[in-house]
Image (tube, rainbow, N blue to C red; front, side, top):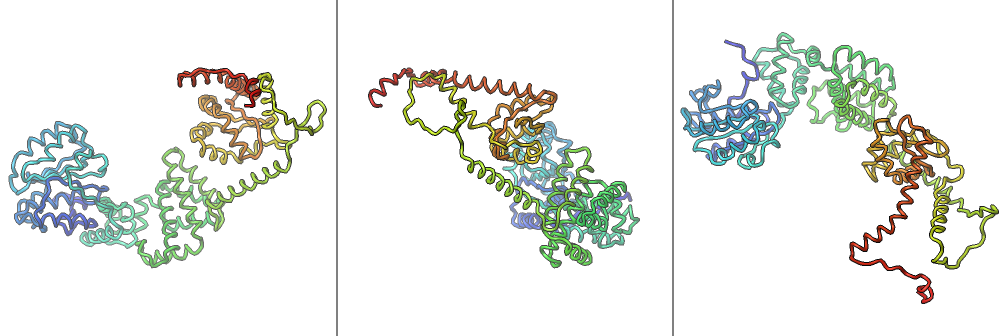
Amino acid sequence: MAFLSLYRKYRPDDFEGLIGQEHVVKTLKNTLQTGRIGHAYLFAGPRGTGKTSTAKVFAKALNCVKGPTIEPCGECPACQKINSGRSLDVIEIDAASNRGIDEIRDLREKVKFYPTEGDYKVYIIDEVHMLTKGAFNALLKTLEEPPENVVFILATTEPHRVIDTILSRCQRYDFSLLTIKDIKKRLKYICQAESVTYHEGAVDLIARSSNGGMRDAISLLDQAISFTNGQLDENRLQEMLGKVDSTVLVDLFNKIVNKETAAAIELLNQIIDRGNALSVLLDDLIEYLRQLLLIKECGGKTSVLDLPEERIEELLQESNKVDISLLINFIEELTSIKKDFVFTEQPQILLEMGIIKLAALDQGDSLTALKSRIASLELALKELLEGKRKARPPVSVDKQGGQEAKTVNNTKPSVIEDKSEDKKNVVKKKERDTGPAENSNITIEQVRELWPVILEKIKEKDISVQAYLLEGKPEAVIDNCLSIEFPEDKGFHKNAAARKLDLVKKVITTVLGTDCQLVFKLRGEELAEAKKKELTEQESNNGDREDNRDDLVDRVADFFEGEVIKVNYEVLEDKGT
């Protein structure tokens, strides 16, 4: 007899063999007992959780000589043919390879024929989400009003990709991932049936590596039996799966906690040299930290961790060396690194940087607390600077004599004064008000240190401006003028940020506690040239603003269908207005 894979050999034959899906089994049994058999079912859930197996058991329950029954005999011709895949009344269709409209039209023609052996013709369409939109539409009418004694069972791992008109015509059953306990129980049963010797740790390792899928677990068991020659050992299975030994994980963690950074990085490189994948190492390390966290918080009697007693004792001893906040910081940092793995071609650098960063943390330190402390210091610095400003009242100085002006002119300004003179006075006043305070020069080191805070503040006001500024960086401070440099190919970002100059300048002034000039430049562009260009654009904008006032008034008058009336202010004053 030809060799049969374990997952096919031990596929469930009846409802009792379906593990971990009690809610589905109970509903289907009630359906059979009450005779409320629907014409279309949708089985949705992760791979390897029993969707197709449940569909076949349900088909046997419908077509057994005793059926419909909740206990198919498995011995009648109908049951045996369904088990071997030879039944003419149970048709399995792989939608991934039969996804077109022509295949569905062919199905619509064949569905009209009556069952040949059993009472029902059952169509099991696996991975139904792979059907094209045209195929779905062709299936709609048949699915809504199928011939008598025809049952459709649609199986999918991605129910959100099935169109709503199909979903509304089906009874939906959601399959969940299996627990470690259920998977281990099934694996031990198969090992005993196959006369395979095993260690508890080996079975636990296979169950955890299956990610909640029974089929994956049994396939790994099949591979492990061949690899270990029928004697399952945890150490050899770690070699097969590319896992890192738990003692190595403990050693790596302890070196980081003890701030032995160089030794930790050396151990990391040894792990990589042994051929262990960094993604697997990261997953194992996060899982180990999770176990420590749960043991420390819930105690050794927790049922959350389904681990051997000796392993629980080891974790209890290890958890006493660290506090919860440190474990949380480690998990947060490693999880963040795992997300970034997708976007880099050199994940080793990310992991090495993470180790260095984590080794710098002390027991009890919290990344959140550190951020809060920094924010408090920034606020205190800002208040201190503002307090100094308020302590120095503004002084108006007579430019000719250099003496403090002591008189205040309370008379009404004449409304017929030259407007151009008013403009000059406004500009001069603005220059005095916005000029940098005495002894308030900033340094590039201050700007670079507070640049992340500046970007975060800008993000709160306008996220698009922050996105532009992410392409630039503080380059220099000359004569209290800060230049932000952009790469040569980022001219668009530079110009877009320059259009929001006032916003950026306001935030920088708030964070630094002092005013400064601001210039955006491209790499290689001279600062003086960029500054001149920036000032020219600002002056042009200021001039345009005054010139555009009349245009704005005209547009408002046109919009309201009115007219502009010129007012004689002398007449108004004479009338006491």
